[in-house]
Image 1: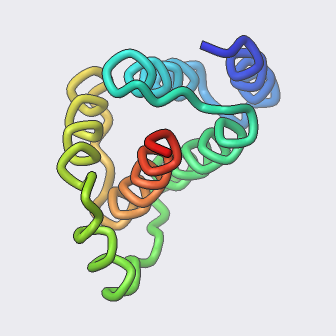
Image 2: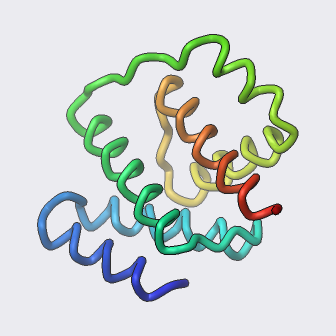
Length: 122
């Protein structure tokens, strides 16, 4: 795992943008992506993905909801060839961490994971 990812997570935790548990869960997801799915995040990808996850966890902790993805976008996501893999990624992450995303957040997680999967397959 890129040491810059760990430094960023450490910094976000020190600034209280992440809780220690959230930091641990994000590290678990990045590790899962690398070891089980061969997805290695570049620095820019990692920054965007980590920012998204931090905001997702913040909303979940505060009981805030995000609007559901528009049906057209959700349909495209379901039609994505790697959607079965993305479903496995989320199940594995939930199994490892105990984190369960609300349905609306799950759609956005699948979108991000699909883009990472697509990017790493090119």
